Amino acid sequence: MTRLTTTHPATATHAAAATTPLTFPTGFLWGSATAAYQIEGAVAEGGRTPSIWDTYAHTPGRVSNGDTGDVAVDHYHRFRADVALMARLGLTSYRFSVSWSRITPQVTADGLGPVNAEGLAFYSDLVDELLAVGITPAVTLYHWDLPQALEDTGGWTARATAERFGEYAGVVAAALGDRVRLFITLNEPWCTAYLGYASGVHAPGRTEDAAALAAVHHLNLAHGLGAAAVRAAVPDARISISLNLVWVRPETDAAPDVDAARRVDGLQNRVFLDPLLRGSYPADVLADTAAVTDWGFVRPGDLATIAAGGVDVLGVNYYSPTVVRHWTRERPKEYADGHGDGAASPWIACEDVEFPFRPGRKTDMGWGIDPRGMTELLVRMAHEHPGLELLVTENGAAFPDVVGPDGRVADPDRREYLRTHIAAVHAAITAGAPVVGYCVWSLLDNFEWAWGYGKRFGIVHVDYATQERTVKDSALFYADVIRANAVQP
Ligand code: NCW
Image (cartoon, rainbow, N blue to C red; front, top):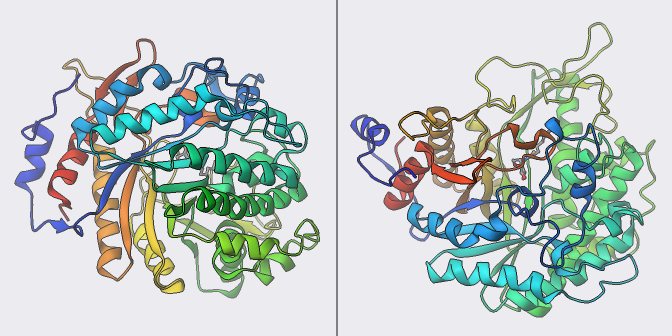
């Protein structure tokens, strides 16, 4: 494994070019993030039952190369060594997700069923291991791996799923809440709702717009119910939700382009933020989607439940900005958001919106690189929701890394992506945004959902044949940032 050293050649070059460092506030959290299905493996161990991602990944044609999370990076068996690696990098925080199917393997729409002590023990041991090396755990309760039995009765289109999630959240909080303070209810409900139920490129693979909007509401409700249950079990818990918010820019100031941006912003950002922080759904989103659904699944009291859940700190996942423009049928539609023209779209009621191809550098996901979007997004949140603490729960980049003949993984593109985005977080703080921490996605190369093992987001390389971990240059760079609590501009 690559040594951790401040005299690494890449680091030395960088130091030579150094100017005045951008220093972060004392106590700023430096973390990395992972998700259960993407790293754990051991899908049939410890009493775990299948989730929708087991089913989806085992359905031919759904995931590139037929990859599955059956083994993933075997974190279930290697978590102690992985925590030691985090400690060597100097992380002060680690965000991981809990697999619901390990905690209540017999859950159905009618009830949680028995709690699986072996499932809880795995996460309890992980928390102990982290605390023993001074790393603060942050627990994500749901990162896309719904127990299959709940999908069989409607998944997130069904209200019962939100109700069971609330109960499950209380179980996890009661077990870990003596050592964990920060609970993140959901990761990127945008992906669960729209990629899972509208475009079908994520599990469970459904393509029904009305179902996706029902899922949006039930995910919001799940947050409210989960937040209440966590607070009941752990009165001093801090509640968060990780949203993949996007700074949506219209390509021009022309009214049709501005309106296209409003629609996308509504479905991407405000349909999650407004119920949480304002206690209502945006009127324009309800109007835009009126032909798809009457939103009759919103029951009296739901919005109060969601707003009462609220957040103590808002989790922001940022990767790339989105530029949109009004589309007319004069020319073929562009799909620079990664959604091919043959596929169902995750963008409901946006038939007249296109995502134009943009010049400039992109990551291996095809996502444009623009750190200004990070600053703009955080500053917007601070401006629109004064006093709301912000935590960057994910930021990072996929690149096709290889271990070189010298055993080193040189990943200058990721290193530069991290440097410029961390500097962008600093710029937001300087502009008044109360950002309390930053998590790199991801600690380890892992199962990248529909892309399988073909996309590498890790700051630590994993050889999938041997499970050998190799610290990439970007991880050494990140370790230096953490040590200095500062980044070079
Ligand atoms: S795919 C995605 N990601 C990546 C994933 O590994 C992680 O679990 C997520 O939290 C990295 O961070 C998030 N986000 C989805 C963004 C939209 C993708 C559009 C796909 C079009 C086919």
